[in-house]
Length: 146
Image (cartoon, rainbow, N blue to C red; front, side):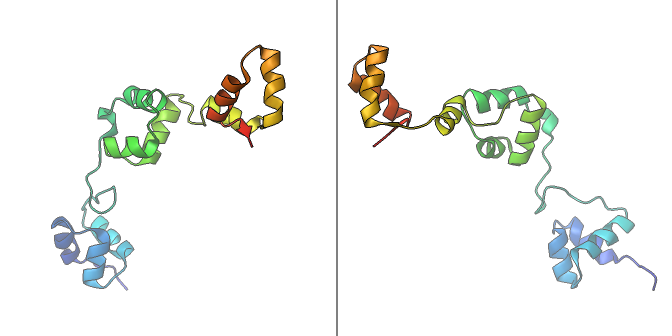
């Protein structure tokens, strides 16, 4: 059987329909639509849903890194702000050497044993600070459990 590309595929796609929409309209698989378009020399859109592709070379990735590390914005928030996928933000931050792991306080909290209320007084005495002030600080950073 000889493959003959359907010119209707090209017309529908160039009207702005996505590969999936063209496939549904013609009753074929979206891979078939893609194959027809390729055979007809029609470049396919990237980015899903016919969304325009963002030129990431126009984004100041050092500014994005600043917003991530200093302002604490997540890759999801940054992706929405700059019109790219969070994985794209992650990839560029990694290339810049930005450490995306949890912050030091979170890492410390997860590896430090919790103190019990009775231990605060002894520690406060050793540090020569008021027990109430130390307890408040420990609660603030979730090092103290009841």
